[in-house]
Image (tube, rainbow, N blue to C red; front, side):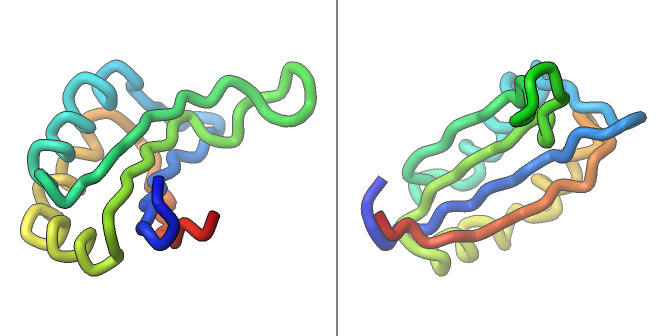
Length: 107
């Protein structure tokens, strides 16, 4: 990704009693997000947590979705009209309130 782009990370923390359906996330939710955000979305990836720093430990996050945009403004303009549909779909695949971080690519 290019320097100056906006990166949106959506992280689903692991924990006892928390559920996350990776199949639904990859096959339904992210394709929906990609369709709704259209050309504003410049790239995306999905990460599945495998483990933590200590051998045999649980991954801090069950899953992480990464999305790239030319700017924070582009993200906001693309996301705002579809925010209810996107966030309304969260309960279909998980019981975790996601953590969201918006970053600037600097290198």
